[in-house]
Length: 142
Image 1 (cartoon, helix red, strand yellow):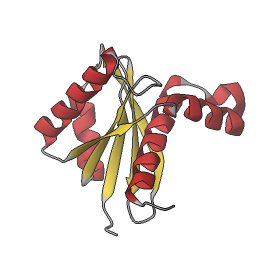
Image 2 (cartoon, one colour; image 1 turned 120 degrees about the vertical axis):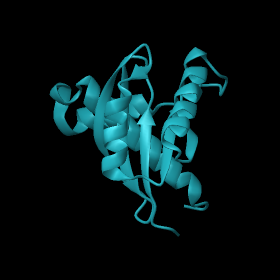
Image 3 (cartoon, one colour; image 1 turned 180 degrees about the vertical axis):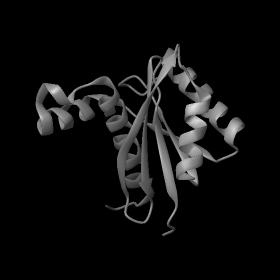
Image 4 (spheres, one colour; image 1 turned 90 degrees about the horizontal axis):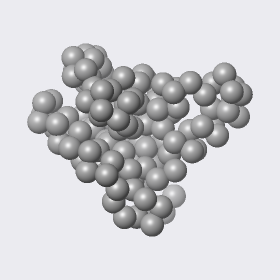
């Protein structure tokens, strides 16, 4: 197993959550959430975080319908992933993110009640779930 640093993004039209993780431990933690205008973040903020953490791989959550079919947001998340790759030249992978926001809300509520449910924390925690599900997909049989 390699020890790459990975950064995950939970794409949304109003907010984009970010998490950082280590491949060797298979764990991730929330970093931040960027405000977005109709799905477009302030790219200077994204660049600052990428430069600070120097991830080897970027993982973008792919929003799908529960039956696995694509929705309008799916294409927008793909476009965001392509822009990340184009701007920063880092490899980008997509990860099915069905239920990550629901899971993030439940996890945060369990730890901190309603006060923990601010939008930025939910989005950043969703990015953690996306990254940890990517890790679990890399190690079959666990």
